[in-house]
Image (cartoon, rainbow, N blue to C red; front, side):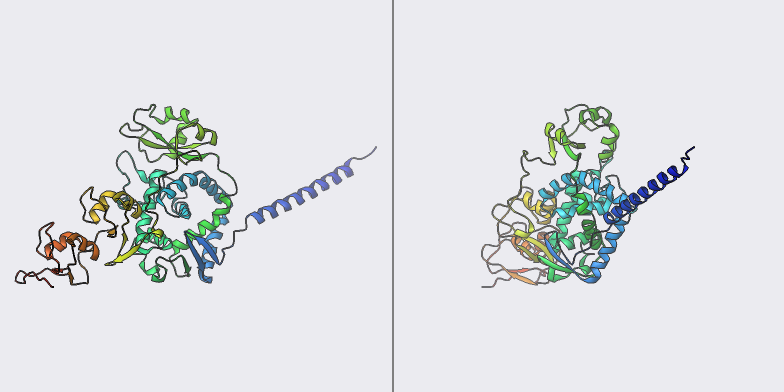
Length: 436
């Protein structure tokens, strides 16, 4: 009688051998895939050619390695980025800021709309209430636009542009996003204000180094495959029904939980009927073609209107009284300049001592922050047909302060050669001086 035991042993050994080879192959493949990308000596980022010193490079590499240490988390993050980035990029394009800044939302919230920090920073871009209101976001009992992907991205872009207006360098604007406008000052170098290239050292702010690490760690993974579905913005007018997530979900071939997840900005289950709202919905390509999608824009969509003014890089920027101002062009409007500076139109009028609806004058500097109460200069001699308002813009001093210092009435005409007091108030016993 023939024993089958030896044959079974041989078969079992062969199976073990094959399994061992397969496990070794799989481990090698995983190991190869899990090698974090190396930080280059130079990189083009945010319209800047950036060179790293050795210390900065090592610190960034450590951050990249940390992100790659948990490959499962990184893959999920890349998957979320593929879904969110098309919509975010559309808003950044409209706001004319570098598309690389989309990685700041990844760093801030891991693209979680309902994220809330211990410091009460909220939403995709982790904005505090004061900063969010400053750039026009709505926060009330019904709605928190910091959690709305479109509005929060627009608000963050405008907030970043305010910082760019101070330093004319997007890397410094990123630091200021975390530290505040003037908290970034110790980490800046005046040589790089308005520059196209810079060197980053290891003693720069960790927040900027971590931002760069997110870009390097994720960029290839995000681009490795196309996103399907992607988050889209669909306008829902007041007269459209239904208005509850449970009833809206079938319209988008999804479920109520998914709609609620991507729309945490709405603090209730029913969409208000007072205005048109942008619903954030994950849609496949064929659905995007069928529905009236606002963002992301398809190739057949009307492109977003781009202001004729162009971005900061194409504008004449000046520093007056320690503040950044842009010299207006012929085709500028209050709306286009406010958009350029990332502030509301109302704030633009207020910061520049203008009544609502006032026309913009070419070749005059306009500010994106409140003008100062004083300047180092003591006097100004009126030239030609100057107005006190023009002088206030020229020196970056508030118009009302100049009125008081010169004991003048609003819109009082100025005589050529008159001495205007800029820093101190003209004493009552000192007569008005006119110099020929």
